[in-house]
Structures are given as structure tokens and as C-alpha cells.
Image (cartoon, rainbow, N blue to C red; front, side, top):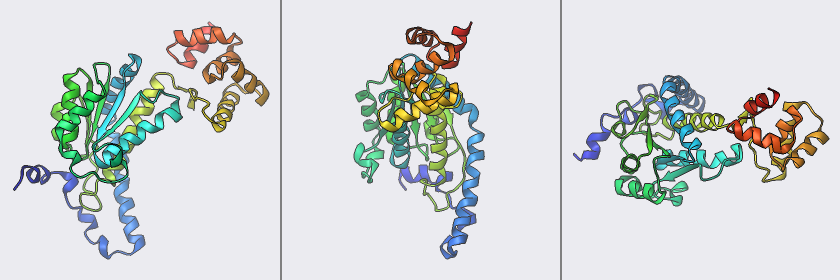
Length: 305
């Protein structure tokens, strides 16, 4: 037997699910019910990991505040989820595309088709970290359902050597990557509906947790006011109008006033909100925002005394 076989043998993600042994003989409704019943376990598994997820968020907020990045590293489905979460941050939060980075074994081609053997090289994982010039200001999250993917382990080892904070995300207990991270997140969702198909429950748990890490971290640096996205960049007509709608929602002004404040503030949504809320000039609003580390509610409180 090979070393890889020995590593995979005890993994929960490779175990057979006793509740779906007869799924190949079920009718469509029965199949879907089996899948749904297994999916119900995911949220509670993620809930148990909130304390460790909080550790990852704390690292990421510190990285962002010091000019560092959140870097996701994975292979296959795990890698695609990291790239997806990174890609969604700029349009949602108006963040610089370099703030959240997704790295997938095999490169961009692996996003749409398997790249044979890409996940098996720890050296390639380390090289990708070097190419990104990772340093002490960065947080690197290694995503691997099995918890033993060589590409991810190589990346995490190199990231730690360079002083970065490291986080692991696996759906197996006591994963191998635990030895290479500062925080280990392990939502235990149990065997998959189809044995070894970690694109199902494991991937859903990973997606939920990546959503939590990136969203909570962006909130932590002032990208959200109340529960609205206030750092939108007006890259399209739709986003321009959404910005005005947010101003109207928060300040209760009419469309024309929202449009006037938006334009006079240099199309800066945060500044426009502060101008209407406090009556100060855009320049004073910008100063208050700077003093408040980008948080609108702090800037408004500061100006109101």
C-alpha cells in the first residue's frame, strides 16, 4: 500500500455514509430527500467552529489594517471556492482586488477543468507563496477537505517561514495541516452522500466559513454601515443607482438630495452619508472618516460630539 492510501484510509471524508447506501435505487424524490437530510447537518457543524473562525477573522482584520492580505490556498473544489470568495469581495465591498487573493493548484486552468497531479506538489504550493511575496502582514488560509493536500501544506509551511499568520480549514478531525497553522477550523459534516465527493457537504461548509471570514473582516474595517454595503465603487450604472438608494435608505432623503450629495462628495458613498447626517462639508467628512478608521458610525458620532 502507498503512503497516500494509508493517509486516506482513516479520513471521515472518505468513509461510506450508511444512510445513503441505497441511493442508486431510490426515486428522484427519495434521492433529493437523502441529500437534503445530510445537508441539514452542515450549519450545526459550522456553528461549533465559530470560536476558531473568530480567530481567523481577528488575524484577517489585523492584516487588512496593516496593509496586508487575506490569501486563500486550495486545490480542486477547495481552491475554486477560495478564488470565488476572493473575486466577490471587490464588487461587494469596494475592496482593492489585491486585498483578498485566491490561489488554486494548477493555476487559472484548474478553475474550469482538473489539472492532473497539481495538488500533489508541496514545492508548487511554496513557490506560489513566494510569487505572491507573502510576508508578516498577510493571513494565509489553507483549504483542504482531507486536511492533507501537499500543495496546501507546502504553501502553509512557506507562509509560516515568511512570518504570515496561517489558518487551516478541513472537514476531518485531527487533519495533517493542523501542525502547520496558528488556527485550525474543522467543521465535521460526516461522510458524503456519495463517498469521497467533497464537492458536496464539505464544500458547502467551506463556502459558509469563507463567507464568514471575508464578510466579518470587511465589516471589521468599516466596509459596512448598519447592514448596508457603504464602500461600493460606482463601476457601473447599476452600482451608481444602488449607492443613491443606500444613501436614501440611511438618511431618509429624496432621490435628488441623495444624488446631489453623492456627486458633491466625489461619488464617495461614505462621505455622502456623513455629509447628510451631520451637515459638514465633504472635506470635514473625509477627515472624520480617516480619524475613525473608515467606520461611518464612528465618524458620525465624532462629528456630532
